[in-house]
Length: 336
Ligand code: GLU
Image 1 (cartoon, helix red, strand yellow):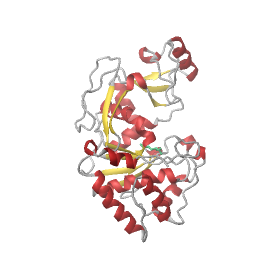
Image 2 (cartoon, rainbow, N blue to C red):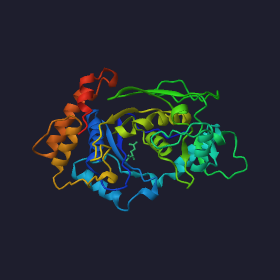
Image 3 (tube, rainbow, N blue to C red):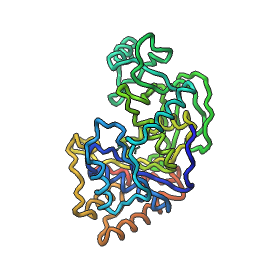
Image 4 (tube, helix red, strand yellow):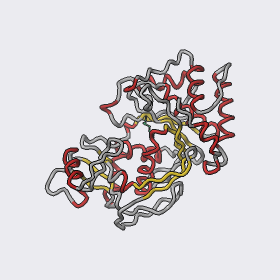
């Protein structure tokens, strides 16, 4: 896929879904991505991920932008909205279809459950069914509902982070292990073909899936470093596979610790996350900084942000991940 080049240098981003206002958990990812950009002397962008329109709350995008601004986190370029970028996602899907890497799927959830049961593979993974590949060889006269990526085709053996566009091979394989290194969590790997299966690129309702949109946008915006919540770690191998299939570069990844709700799960609207109170932005930032293992600050916002940038620089720049001492990684991994 050809994407116009952007100026070289560090480009990071914060990519909230406007399903509600920012809460204490989402501010952690916002602050960490901002600090990483500043510590590298780079640019920090904001992308509103409103691709899943039914889940979006009207006005939440503007609330998020206001909350970020109140905390002194100002994007270096005008924010972009995924809902306005559909032609880019369509182009990417067509590229994959033309290379035989994406195919239409006629299966409903019930069809998938039945096929999995027949094959004796009923265990869902994080609530998601591993697609058994029913429509890989054709729709058998049924109408196509969604589009999926073929994960059983060897896409590239290049390591993640390789800046050259990958060549697509056409060898059919049973497993597709993606190796990558998280700057905080260390080496990671996932067999996407076995553990996830052919995943959805465009949904039955016509909306493009998060996986495709995020990969296309990160490349189109020239993102070199992704800093986001640890709950998204599991998506990274899928995104790297898609980058390779589209011939796009792979950014560096750092996944931040999560703030947990009363039920021990990631703080979210569903488990009682309150909208972030930015009437005292330093208090909100101090709470986010504590999750990142950074000491509380007093004084002005500017002073606090500058102090944390210096500490972040000492910890996370220069030597990426593999040399990050385990003790530091553990300290950052605090789950309140
Ligand atoms: N939009 C996603 C979220 O709000 C973040 C996606 C990403 O950072 O890759 O959870």
